[in-house]
View 1 (cartoon, one colour):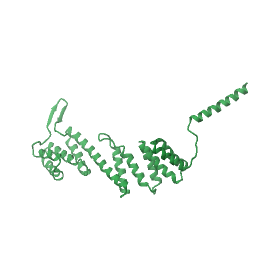
View 2 (tube, helix red, strand yellow):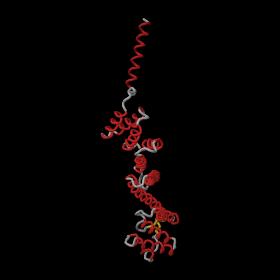
View 3 (tube, rainbow, N blue to C red):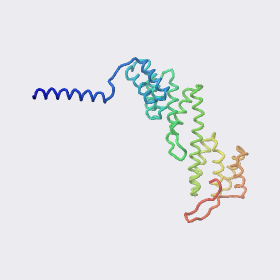
View 4 (tube, helix red, strand yellow):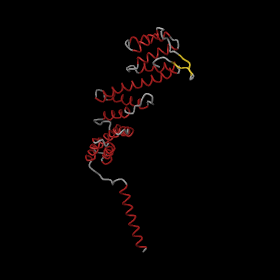
Length: 269
């Protein structure tokens, strides 16, 4: 009887081992690199990005020294990017760039890395960490690979990023104006004028400078900035408002007392 019990226990352990094996990951099966790569490519076409990334990662894992390994690594990063797994894609691309600096399509690796940051840019009311990272990555593409299609697109995206950052500076400057911290506001608006000269926000930044100088009683400075605004943007609606301001018809923001404190009623704040 004890002998039968031992046999039964052994069979039970064996069965439990089989169950555990079937419930865990599938057993390791080595496949040709081309088969793994094509599986990943087909998954990518079908929009199954998770499966595609796994297949491409498997190319590198099973065939680390083959020509398909570098291709699989780059395509795996692309699959992670499409799935919105930007940190994973960036990590893969950083490793790829370090290991394969002479790869024929290394320009695309840099470009895809920049896109990973660019696609994470948030509204101007949010933290701009990814905006600055995107700008640095796009500048790298434009400088390292001039004349390529990736450099041209990077330059276009850089212009949009600059415009975004200028909008953020304006938003902060308006906040300071609402609370009558005019010197702090001037610093923000001057930053837009000095650093983001090619953006669409320059006319408003100049007008806001005029408002701040007028509010502080700095008439000469207000007239100087108004002259710059009128010379560069004579047809701008901001110049029309600034002209009225410096002519004394609306010299400074109207300040009104409320229960909550002091605030400005000037249109456009």
